[in-house]
Length: 319
Image (cartoon, rainbow, N blue to C red; front, side, top):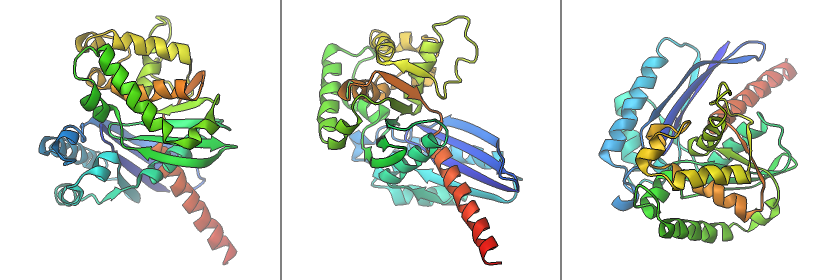
């Protein structure tokens, strides 16, 4: 029996999941937790430097997670930092501070590696063949073109819910000018991703907390629906996505906090966080979205399981 854990040190939220792997290969989740730390907050207007309050929140989350896993033996633990730490000019100082305060070694993973882990998480949990995967985080957005279940192109863009909000959405209730500038910027960005044209008319697989919020809000529209937050594999049409996005645009910050299904701690960045998906649907003429809960953390688990399988087969061959 082994245990494998991943801490996803994201730009907006920090997640941890620990999985137990039985000798027969069966897996089940032992520990799962999440803290909204806003690690990328204030970076863009401060020369891409992680800010002290944000670093303090992140270290507090890691200290909490460390207590959660005390006593778990035979544990292979990875702490994987994504866009905020990847872009930070004080990256080394932050990683040293994390090591000093928590004992965790931080892996700063490249954008394309993050996209590949997203692909592994999706392809091992959903029956996809051809699609475009989008993972919108706090400070980056990963795009993956999948053809015949293979990742033919992977890309990480330096835009996300926190950074787009700080750059383009300056009022509680976005103005027409704000949205125009935001969508114009997204159009220019997507124009540079030439291979997106190969994904035209295919479904979009959506990852990330802000994107999943669209599904949670839509599921809340049905008063008889139970388990509204169980959205892995849930589908929405492009018109349904537009309807939810329009509702958020028409709401002030306080009004968004009261929209059923929308977490209060995400209300200030959810418009910026969902805009890349909303515009992508238009850009590639896609009519449907499938939501996935399994991205980077699940992808890292499947990589580890593959490594265990190779070790086992290699041992058998040599004996």
